[in-house]
Amino acid sequence: MKKLLILTFILLSCKLFAQKEIKEYIRTDACEIKSMDINHQDNTDLKAIKSAIGDSKIVLLGEQDHGDAPTFLMKARLVKYLHEECGFDVIAFESNFYDLQGAFERDSLNFEDAHKGIFPIWTQCSECDPLFSYLENTLKSKDPLYISGFDMQLYFNENYRNEFRTFLKENNLKVSNAERFFKVFDVLVKDNKAYDLEEEELSFYFKELEQLYTSYPKNDFRKQELHSLIGHSKMRTASNIRETLNIRDKYMADNLLWLSNKRFKDEKIIVWAHNFHIARNTSKKVVSLGGEVHKVLGSQIYSLGFTSFSGSTGWTNQTDALHNYDIKEPHRSSIENDFKALGYKQAFLDFRSYSGKKKNFSMKGLRHRVEVRDWMNILDGVIYIEEMKPCTKKEGSLKTQ
Image (cartoon, rainbow, N blue to C red):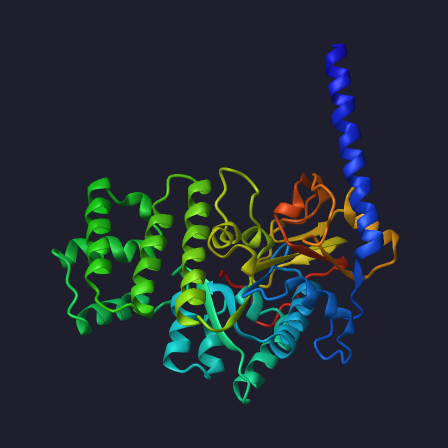
């Protein structure tokens, strides 16, 4: 019992010491952000972010939940700054790869076509309007910010099944038994009843799908889409939620790496996604987009997460309590209190430049919930926003995604 008490005291002391160190680092190195307005004229307050990302090829911008309106405003300002001041010419959304990159391949300057492919959690949020207005205007200018995506979910494209059949026909790609193949294909892409499929049917389907991927001769967007379709199909037939999430992030990373290493080899990319996806090293059992991309590109990526003190969040297309809720204030030892105590409404903290020994501390770094983690090895930096607010929903937005 005595040994247990001593061990508990030591662990508690280490935790308190780590919190004290990070508190001092916030006091000395946090940089105030004066405004979240995309039209704010003085960008001096963002220079610390430019310095922190350095020569990174990909900057990943997170969010704690998909209904965080002030975060979207702040991210929009960052997108404009990264494009105009840091040389980023592509923005890739956590939205369907087939729709968004397909729109780019058809007409890289067609904003309306691209906008249709972005998930409604953002397009139906009024606070994202400044972002989309800016993107549309750049596509009409001499300095366009191109739009793409990297998610492999196909639920939201009503035309995909017919377009896939046309693609096979035009490229003389065949399966050994079309009826058997498309029975499974149609279920996985549209009908949402994968549990009704037999193991033998799935085995045949995946074998044929791999054969289509191998036999397609071009190394282009459609080749990568076949790879992405394999990922979607695996995700739909996963045995549990953890496997489902891991497959999704793995294939999202594959799509993003294809964009970075092949399609936009000479361009720098802004990623718009959730904190959870841009993070790395969260668990040995968790596969994340940020972790997979970091394995390949290392310090060429910069993952910028978001945290907040309190307020509320609300999705544009959901009305339940899971997606619309009040945000609890963090407990006293969490770093959000340190930002608030210094009077910041918004502030940036670069984790990379911290010269001390990296230790666990408390932060709401993945979602609107405090966790004690080794945050400096999970994210490269964080933006603090004092008050979170829900999205202002556009008329007709309350539909399932």
